[in-house]
Length: 129
Image 1 (cartoon, helix red, strand yellow):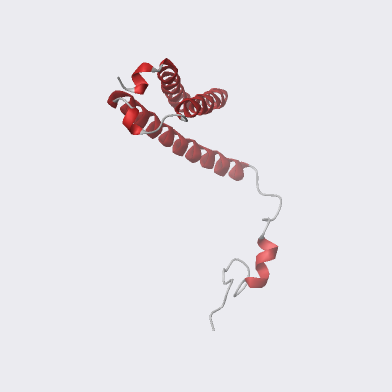
Image 2: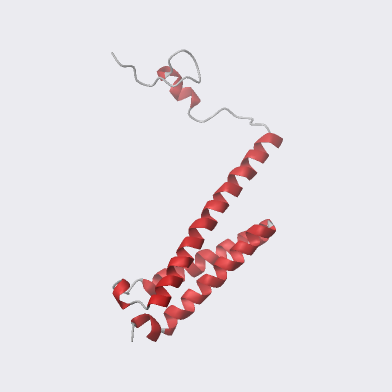
């Protein structure tokens, strides 16, 4: 009997991770910031708990095929949700910048001016001879 089928901690952690992935997906679809924040915090905690449970496993050889499939699906869904969260964050930041103009100059714009070729905004950090 494979180790995964015999260990209820692994099954429980995997089930919780699957629930958290589903809840995060629903929160992203609904678009309520508080729900997204709570769901992603829960997803982070459940993924961390799953990683801790899986830490002592020596590899795929002791894994049942069905559990391996579940792990692959959870990992894929987490990656897709991470990408969706990054896209949403960029869209929110872009919307914020359109509503509230930037009041300070860029942090490194002054430092780059001595390397600029042809004026500000043109990157020519190093010239070839």
